[in-house]
Length: 408
Ligand code: PLP
Image (cartoon, rainbow, N blue to C red; front, side, top):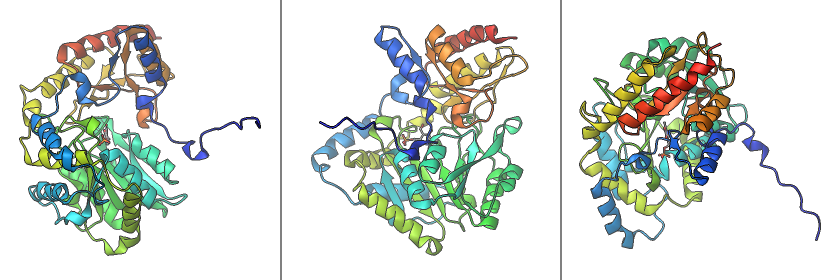
C-alpha cells in the first residue's frame, strides 16, 4: 500500500469561522463526558431549555409523515409556500409575493449558503453588520466574496451606523445584509434607519438580504418592520423560519421570500434555482411543519408578553448584567440574547476567546466571545437568554465574581 497522503481542509475554509460551536464547546463536551454539569449558553436552541414544540406542529407533522417520503419540488411543497405567502399578506405594506418566489430550506442556514454561492464571485463585497450572526460572514467567504463589516452603534442602541455603511461602499459592493431583530445585540431597527439602508441600497444598486428570523420575538413596545416593506422597489430576499418563533430548531425548517423587481437579476435567481435543485429539496416532513406553524396558534405571543417566560428572562439577564461593576448592556428589544460590554478601562481582557474558555473551565458556564460575532475588539460577550430567570441570574452572578480577577 502506498503511504497515506495527508488530507487538510480545503483552502476555501481559510476564513470560515463559527465560534458559536468552536473550541470552547469541545472543552464543554469533554467536561460533560467527565460528569460535570455544564450550562451551555452558546446556542439559541429553545429545546435545550425546556421549551416544547407546539403540539399542533408535531401532530400535523406526524399525520403528514406517511405521505412525506418522496422528494418534493425543489422550492418546496406548494401548501407550505402558499402559507408563507399568506403570512406576508397579513403584514402591512409587504410587497406582493408569488408562491414561486418562495423557497423552503433546511433552516435559514441552508438558504443563506445557497444564496451566497449563487451570488458571489471572487472579490465581490458584501456589507455585513458588526456584530453579526457569523454564518453571514462565513458563507460570504466560502462563496468567494469579501465580507465588509459596517458598524452598529452601541451608543445608539446598536442601530446600524448609516455613515459607516456609506463609507464602506465600493464599486465591488454587491449586497447588504440586515439582521433585524439582531443576533447578537437584540436590537430592533427603527423605521428611519431601515429607510436609510433602503436609500443607500437604491442609490448603489445593492441587493438586500434581510434575516428576520426573530421578527416575532419582540419585547416592550418594539415593532418589527420588514426590509421589504421599506424597499418594495428593490430586490429583497427575506429569510425566516421555524427554529426560534416556533422553538423547533431541530426540524431544520426555514424559508426565503423574494420580492421586488427581478428582471435585472434573472441570472442570479436562476442560480438559486439551480442550487436548490442540486440538493433536490428540503426535508419534506419539516416542510409540512411550516403549514402547521403558520396557520396555527401563535404561542410565541404568550412567551413574550410582560408576564411571559422569555420576557422575564430577558429582564433577569439584563438586570443582573447591569448590576456588575464595569459591565453595561443595551436592553435587548428582541431575539434571544444579551450582548454586554466589559469596560476595557475596568477589565483587562486581551483575548476574549481565552476569557470564555477560562470562565467555562472555572464556572462550567459556556458563553461566546464578542469577536466570534465579528465585533472588532475583545470587550463583549454573548449570553443566550433561554434558561429560566434564576439560572440566568446565578450564571451572571458567577460571571461577575469571575470578572473581578481581571481588574488590573
Ligand atoms: N439567522 C440568525 C440571525 C440566527 O440567529 C440563526 C440561528 O441562531 C439562524 C439564522 C439559523 O437559523 P436556522 O435554524 O433556521 O438555520
